[in-house]
Length: 350
Image 1: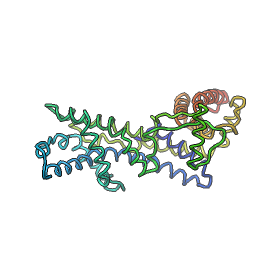
Image 2: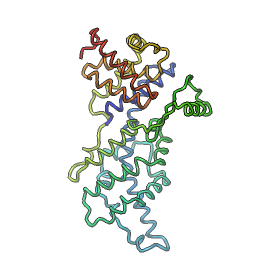
Image 3: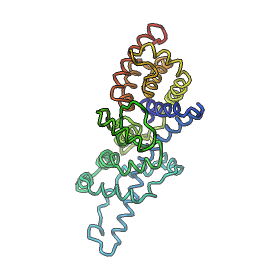
Image 4: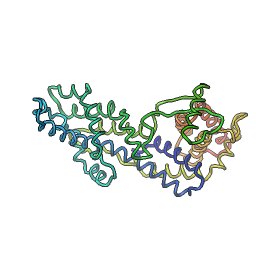
C-alpha cells in the first residue's frame, strides 16, 4: 500500500523537519520516517475497520429506536439491509484486520458523537435511500453502497478529518488544503505572526490555497476505495487487504533515499549550484526547493533503475503542492539541465 509517491512525500516531510532540527541524530530521524510510513498504513487499516465498527454501532442504534416508548412503525420493524451488508460482514470476519485492531490504540467505538454524526449524514443521503429502496440486492450492490458512502461521505467529512488530526500527527491536514505564500522573510511560528504574513501575501497577490490531492491521507483514501472495489463475494477479504510495503525494495528505497540525501546534502548542493540560473544562488533557494532538488539528485545517482524523467516528474508534482507558485517550473528546469549535465559527465549511467 505504501507506494513510491507516498514514500517520496513522507521522505520530503521528515527530511525537511530533520534539517530544521539539527540536534536530532540521523538514526532517530530515520526511525521517525519509518514510524510515519507505518502510521500511514495504520490509517489505511483504521479506515477499513470503520465499516464493521459503524455497522455494530448502527445495530445498537436500531435496537434503542425499537425499544423506545413511542417508537414508530418503521422503528419497530426497521429495514435491516445495512446490517446485513455482505461487504461489511466480510470485513468484520477478516482475521488480518481483527488481529491488527486488537493491538491498535484507537477505537471507533469510543467516539459515539463521531459515529452518530456519520450516521446522520448517511441516513440523510440519496445513497442510503436508494440502497433501501432497491428491490434486489446482492453482493455487488452491497459493495457499491459502501464504495459510494466512503468516497462521497466518509472520505470528505470535515469532522472526521479533524478527529484524525487530533489523534495522530501523521494524519494531519492532508484531507483539506495546503496554504502557500511568498514572503521576503520566514515568519515566526506564533499564530499572530503567521497570520500577519498570510494577510500580507494575500494583499500582494502572492497567496495560494489548493486541495492537497496527493498528500499521504489522500493516497490512503484512494487505496481504501480500491480495496473495497476489488472485493468479490467468493474471495477472502484478507487477500484484498494490501500489505504495508509491496516488497522489501520499497522499504529499502525509503531508507536509502532518506539517508543518502541527508548524508550527501552538501556534496549534492555543489552539483546543483552550477546549473542554477543567474540570481538564484543556493543561499536564495527556498529551503523546500533545495531539498526537492537534493532528493532528485539522490535518485539520479543512487537508483539506476528509476528513469531520470520519472524522477523529475515526481518532484515537480511535489513542488506544486509543497513549495511556491513558481517552484514547479523552476524545479523542472533545474533538474532537466542537471540530468543532462550529469549524464555528459558520466555520473548518471541510465
